[in-house]
Image (cartoon, rainbow, N blue to C red):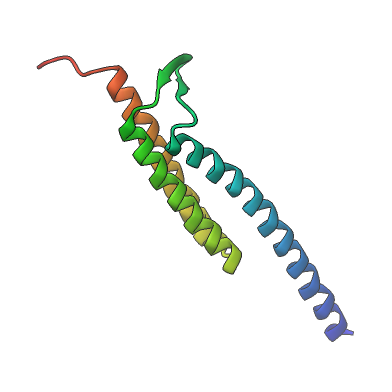
Length: 114
């Protein structure tokens, strides 16, 4: 009785984990494709604070780094699902994306001389 319930539980966890992994990989693939398009220059502008801003070469380089990091996360998820590791990876990815956006904002809004 316990053995059967344990088997059912393990199968359920395995199926749920696989479903989560597949969904996560699909979302990451969409992010990866967009980051690659930006890095290649296929996307020329982005919207920041309601304004359309041209994406600089420096930003494209950062987006290439973002795409590479997304690929690393995808590889990690494909190998095994570790929620804590995924959360850490997504937090780092968010930091990289914020950095990529900030570089464009700094270029658009130069600092006043001191």
